[in-house]
Image (cartoon, rainbow, N blue to C red):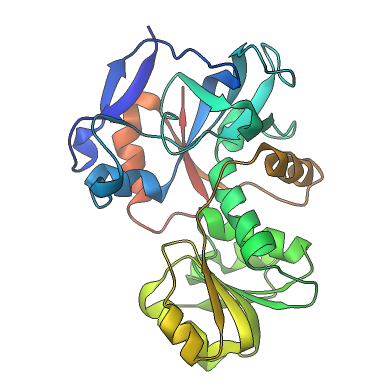
Length: 305
C-alpha cells in the first residue's frame, strides 16, 4: 500500500502524518501518476496551520503539484500512456504521496532537461507567474515590471518570464540573491533591507505582488497612471488602487496542461532555469515545511518519493 501525507488537525509541522492509503483510481478523464517529486508551496503550510480552515476540511491530504511517471489512465485519456514522464499541478490536494491523480487536461510531458525533483518544483509556481504576467498583467514588450519577493519560487519564474516577454525587470530581494536575479534576467535589483523601493523606482507598468500588506500599499506610488498590480496573496486593495488611478487584480492559479507544455518548451530551450533550494524524502515533510516557513528560501523545496 502506498504512502501519503495527511493532517487530522490544524497545527505545526508535527501534525503531518505519514499514512498508508489505498492507491488512487483514476476516473475516465484522469491520469494516475507515480510521484517522484512533489513541490512544497507556502499554501501548504498555511492550510496545515489552519489559517484557511474555513476553506478546507479534515483529514486533509496536502500537495498541489508533482512530477512522475504515468501509472494508469482513464478510459477517455488519449494523450498519455503508462510510463510517460509527466508533471502537473494536480489541484489543491493529493500531491504529498507516492501516487496522485490529475485531470489529463492538467498534465504535460516533463521537460526533458529536468530530473523529476526539479520538474516537481515547477508547475504551481511557474503557472502562477505565467498567469500573473500573461493573463492578469497583459505584459507587453518594453513595459517596466516590478517583482516583489523575486528570489522565491513564484518570483524567480516571474523574473524569467517577464524578461522572456520583453519586459524591463526590477526585482526586490535580499542582497545575497542579487547576483542570482541578475543572472536570470533582472535588469535592476533592490535590497529591501537597506533601500525603500519607492525611493528609487518610478514609472512601473506592472507590479507582481508576492508580499501584500505594507509593500502593496507602498507600490501604488511607483506606478504609471493606469498601471496594473497583480497580487497572488488575496484581493488587492481596490479602493487604494482607484484612488491612485491604478488597476488591480487578484491571482488565483489554476491547473493548465497546455501552459505547462509552453513552460516546458522554454525550460528545454534554456530560457527558464529551475532553482532548487532543497529536497527531502517524503517522511521528512515536517523538515521541509519548517524550512519553507522561514520565508527566506531561494527557489523551491521538493519532496522525493
